[in-house]
Image 1 (cartoon, rainbow, N blue to C red):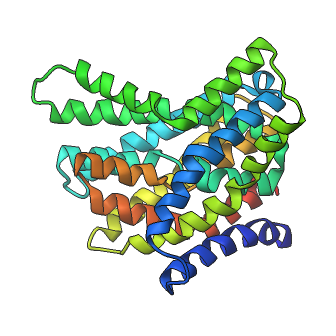
Image 2 (cartoon, rainbow, N blue to C red):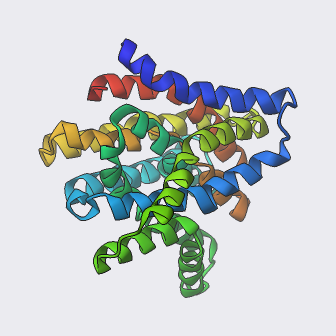
Length: 311
């Protein structure tokens, strides 16, 4: 138990510092978005690129791990939609937004720092094999589903093209793609370039955690808290449970490797679930509350999964 506390305490202390700094006006609220933009658009692409170029990415790609992760994610997406429709009486588009909050993981701002802290840099090739298609698979699925329920007989083609353009413009995809190209071509880098990439990579963890802590000041619990709690439970407990069963019990992946993917699936809902809701103006309250509840509750649920998986 002390080992688990040792892993998560610095992570959530950095989040708490970010929250308190913004809450008590020691850091400007408007600076949070800029900090997160730096992490998402510059530091993390460098981290992804550097990790792929220097790691054994190709041998780390395990279809049993990657497939199990996304089967679990899509199951939570469907469950979130069904519960929204049947239990909470949402309109179809609002239910899709809730389902998206149950499936889209905060892989970068929370996932990478926690998994690196728990299992070291050797976990990154497996984690990156999942992150590499995360936005492409889930954002496309979410946007296509939303367009299907909103299009009123209009052609689906423009919606698909819009989703693909949104994915192609993501700097995270650029970092991953560039890294794969370099690996395929056998390109390596000398000391100044490697040092630059290393320094940028090291900026991800403190900046990301401080930024997500500061961003939590924007969210407030509202009348949708019960549905948000259910959606957060899907993300924090159901998704990793499905991933665990599939990876370990069905595909018999060694737990010492499978735990990287399982722990990634246990991360809270990503800010992009809120962006998705605001983009369509559907289920915004549920998405915002889910991000808040899931991020705060993950301090306990991540500890649980670290205990189950071995820290």
